[in-house]
Amino acid sequence: MDTIARLNAALEGRYIIEREIGQGGMATVYLADDLKHERQVAVKVLKPEISAVLGAERFLSEIKTTANLQHPNILPLFDSGEAGGQLFYVMPYVEGESLRQRLDREQQLSVDEAVEIVNDVAAALEEAHDAGVIHRDIKPANILLRKGKPLLSDFGIALAVSAAGEGRLTETGLSLGTPYYMSPEQASADRAPTPATDVYSLGCVAYEMLTGEPPFPGSSAQAVLAKILMGQASRLTEYRKTIPAHVESAVMKSIEKLPADRFNTVGEFRRALNDTSFRWGAQEAAATAAAESSSRWKALALGATAAAVILAGGLGWALTSSSGDARVERQRIQPFSPQSIISPLGIRVALALAPDGSAMAIVDSVNAFIRLKERDQADGVTLSGTENAVAPEFSPTGEWITFFSEGGLKKVPRRGGASITLASTAPTSNWSAVWLDDDHIVFNGEGWSMARVSGDG
Image (tube, rainbow, N blue to C red; front, side):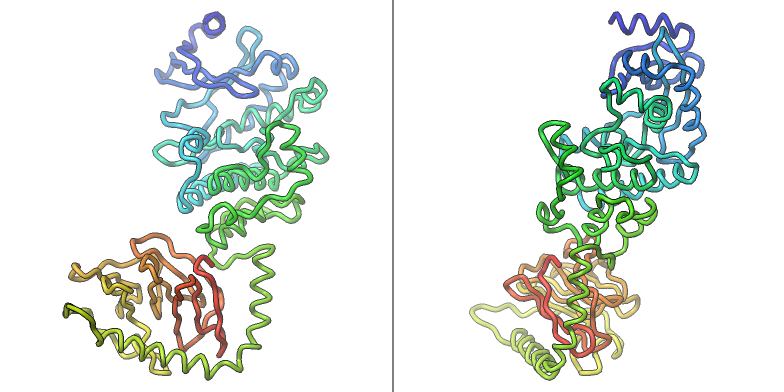
């Protein structure tokens, strides 16, 4: 209360401090009333030891750079100054929570939400980088969530502190940045931060949203920094097998130790996260090896065709045979054009039946999306992300549907959700796939080859 009283005396006529609402390594955050504009704001006051090292003139000069940054996902700077020998700056008060608080409560986010947050933060960073501003301290605590949309905060403190006295901070034993999200070049202080620095930190945030912990956890700052410089991060699918291959590849590239091995820009990172064909590192090597080995399968072409015919015959048997008190049902579906239901080899590619007979996956001949028709539905629902679909096939559990589309084998949840690319090679005709009980999918690959992929890609 003594601190708040001193601040109110120094800020008299401008702001009234109500209470402390947060505290970080370099500043304390207070909720305050902006008397001139009659609004609530967040006043961030640098800790006395930080203010003493930096000096007011240089800090206030450098922090003005961030006042010109304008983007829907950047928390703007309202004001800055010196009060009672302490440096402060003022930003909007955001009702909600930080990403740090959200992760502390839920540990992991859905893949779709994590990617969306990274997309928005990357767009904000693109604006800043174009203006020559590097954030330098991206972390979950600096990403505020307002109605689910992220706002990137604290451009001011990281830039101003860095420019005004990073060297002197090091001499006094104070550090800039949060160890879990610091890039190797920040940890070793051997080069000036670049956009690749922010790429790395944003990649660490994405890693934690998807897996529940940062790439290099540790019990002390020294242990974390040692891992950042010398360790190797585990692949995301070692924590969570449902993470799509392209998302894992994009995140792993973003946290490469050498800046030259990362994405050149946050825009490249964002585009890779949304490109289902993107592969990096071990995944890229595996895809290349698979493509090179595909020619060795050509001798099995006749076998693949025969297998497809047998499968088609087996399906016919399953639909006509019965045991016990079987129930006969009549289902009405939209008719298809011949082109959409028959491939050049005469194999049906437009309809699949769930293993328990409870639903049908139908390729709509009008827009080539998959419609899922449950037993009790009249027309069914369209599954998003299934554009130009062909040859649907249910998983043994009935919870997933595979299909070919745009040169790849994909899967989509039966209950709806984002589609996932399982394999990038696919036939130009003779579409056929079967999901085996051991959770592998055997399908016709590129040319006349036969290929196999696991159910999680």
